[in-house]
Image (cartoon, rainbow, N blue to C red; front, side, top):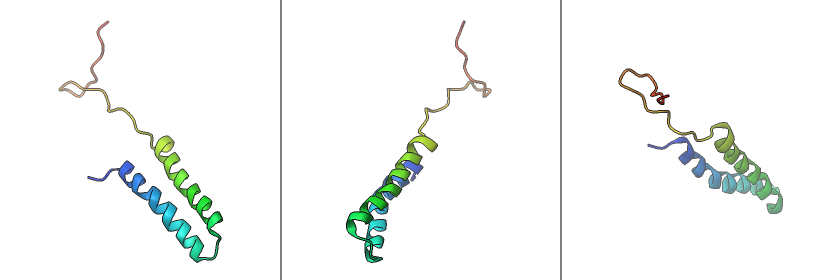
Length: 72
């Protein structure tokens, strides 16, 4: 099963190669196209790190779906 972070890892090189290639074909110089495409890749990385940040799994629950509490 492909998760969100697997998709992000696949989109990073695709964004770098695809966007920079499209910009070069459109007539933008290579030295400008690569930094423009890298902004998109950095945006993907930032979204994965800060907007949909990886979190720990929820605490274990008892059979009645109540969270386990520490003893006093």
